[in-house]
Image (cartoon, rainbow over all chains, first blue to last red):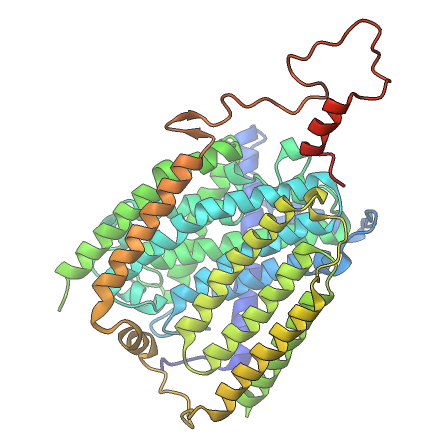
Length: 314
Length: 208
């Protein structure tokens, strides 16, 4: 067994990392939005704006729909946030230091990310309303397209490490990070990451053409929870991207956790910039691009990873 | 101790979720209760030291149950699957099949010679792979790639914009009037349809 943390500290560390990541995402979103729209980036305003919006949503009265599936509706944001926490728990923040440093870490991450489809579909389905249910079905089409891509690039990253443990994948990048060793990996992963967090150009279940889609009937605390859960998912996939492609906790001078946080924030900033700069992709075009272009490229990436595993064999 | 408690939580949870599958009144709910039961079983596999098998069960079932729910919704005359509907039928056959399979599996569970302790959890994934596949790894991998190629081929052929042209070529949208059918003068829209038209309507979406 790998060295593990005490359960109490593990839960606390995951929660703190998630909360810090969600807040940092909201602030970054504010700053990049200000720059792009020409309002200018004011740090103080950007720090306060997310807090103000959250407080306003907490105070807002929650609107109800006719005969919703109340249990599933309450479950959906909790499930999404919980799955993000599972994803975060797998990522190591130091040599042998992870909340869930299990041997099949990549598989646990993949299982959590596969259940994201269930959470988003339930959110859309349980409101008993037209636009949310269309958004839910649309997300299933989206998820089935990026899912293969997501797992294939992670498998390619795991191949040179000859291990499914995320800690081993990080350590296999001691000399050369996967972003250079497997140049196809990180760009393809970021497409899947945006799809997983239905973020930016891939905000298809929540899109404007569906009048808000899965979040169309959400208000008050429910909307706040859904937004928080979505940003938690964004942080979790960015953290895994940092571990699998950017060398995770490795780096000079600073402690491992700080390097992981910096790399995660860099990927979050990239995804936030994509949200403000790139147009939303129609779902048909996204599916076509995934199945016809990106999944074959991901298979190429797997073959490359396999070749590296063979040549690096001890 | 905690391990035992967790086992009972997952086991009882899986059985309760399995029971809810038959009490649910919607296709989506039934599918996701079944998913909850599978998650319970997967977590029990993780407790037994087969973490790869347990997690891969959850990973596969998450997608499969969603796809199953969508297929059920597509085959049923139930818009978006939102209307409640009963999820059980053929009661007698179902009871016989259920009791029979429970007795069969319970017999195996009671009579089989299980090891007293869970396996040492260091390299279970690698050992499991060797145990399951042994020297046939290449054969299995080849079969896997062949299946993947077949699926991609099936998608390419079934695609609406496939390489053989637009799949909707030659098909007509379901109209209120049959295409190409002329109505005589004096026949209004409100009149009762002709016998021939009734036949067509039965083939269309008129089934209730």
